[in-house]
Image (cartoon, rainbow, N blue to C red; front, side):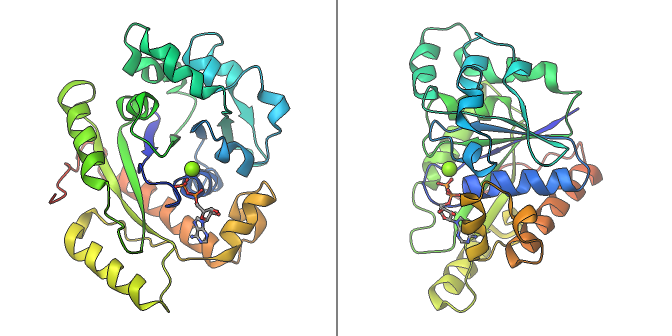
Amino acid sequence: MAKIIAIANQKGGVGKTTTSVNLSACLAAAEKRTLLIDLDPQGNASSCLGVEKETFAKANVYHALINEESFDNCIYKTELPLLDLCPSNNDLVGAELELVHMFARESKLKVALEALHSKYDYIIIDCAPSLNLLTVNAFTAAHTYLVPMQTEYLAMEGLSQLLNTVRLIRASLNPKLTLEGILLTMYDSRNNLCKLVANDLMTHFKDDILKSIIPRNVKLSECTSFGKPIILYDITSKGSEAYLSLAREIILKSEKKPEVANQVKMPL
Ligand code: ADP
Ligand code: MG
C-alpha cells in the first residue's frame, strides 16, 4: 500500500516544490515506485520535471479531481523509470471553485487515489502556499505531512494556522494524519542568523525535526531550469546528498515502524 505524504507550508518560497520533486526523485532512485502529484496551480513541480505543458493540457490533476478523467489518464512518465507525475497548471484554480459545490468535496483526492495504492510505494503531494480546499484535500488523502521550513527569520510565522488546520482535519476527516517531520531547508552554515534559527527550531520542535537538513545549494535552484531533479543534474552536489539522505530517512522510518503513529506533538 502506498504511503502518501503531503508537503505543506502555507508560506511560499520555503522549499516545498524543491523538496517534493527531489524527494520523489530520490525515492524512485532507491527503487521505490513513486508518484508525484502537483497540487499547486502554479505547476512548478511539473516544470521542474521537464514534462511539456502541451502534453498534459487536457488531462492533468484538475481533470482527475473534477472526475472528468480517470486518475490513470492524468499520470505521465518522467526521465526516471520509477517516477511518475500527475501534473497541474492554472486550470487547478478553477477546481477549487467547482469542488465547493461537489459532494464530499474534501475527500475528492483521497477517493481518486484509492485505485492507485497498489501501483506505488510512495505518493508525494506538492501543496500550494495556502490552506485552501486543495490543501485540505491533500491532508485528507495523506498518511503524513512534511513541513519544509526555511532557516531564516520568521520561519515559524503562520505555522500555528497550519497546525490548527491539521487539528481540524484530524478531528473530522482524517484522524490518522501524523507529522512526518519538519524539514530545515536552505541552511547556510556560514550564516550566523541561519545557525541561530536552526538551533531555535531544534530546541522548540526537538524530535519533530528531521535529521536530514537541506543546505542552501545553488545546484538545487539551477536544476529546475533544466527540468531535471538534482540527482540527474549533479549527483555529486550537496543538494543531491541531502535529498538522498532525506529519502533514506523516510524509507527507514516507514519500514521500521509502520504502525507507530508519531502524534502531532508540536508545542504550539
Ligand atoms: P515553495 O514551493 O515552498 O514556494 P520552492 O521549492 O519553489 O518553494 O523554492 C523557492 C525558491 O528557492 C526556488 O527558486 C528554488 O529554486 C529555491 N530553492 C529551494 N530550495 C533551495 C536550496 N536548498 N538551495 C538553494 N535554492 C533553493
Ligand atoms: Mg511550490
